[in-house]
Image (cartoon, rainbow, N blue to C red; front, side, top):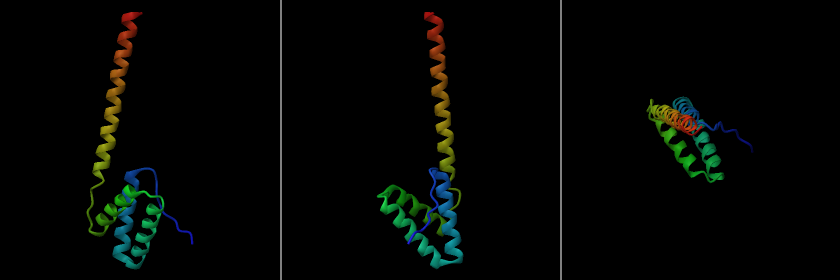
Length: 104
């Protein structure tokens, strides 16, 4: 049979979706929580994506035991990456303009 797994390329969206789904299913319908766990396990292990499976288990644990606000680390990483790209771009432009004006 076919099954649908909601999986995007963004880790933050995946984490929040998996955690919230685990919380809702564990709280209201535990049989569906077990089916969802099997579904995601088959999804990740069929692709040999062990890192993604561990990521899912972490989100599942946080959803079941109601650990919120862990997504801040993804926001901080995205802000750090944006700042790093801005700094590298600024340094590149500075040296590019400096060498162009110095030699030409």
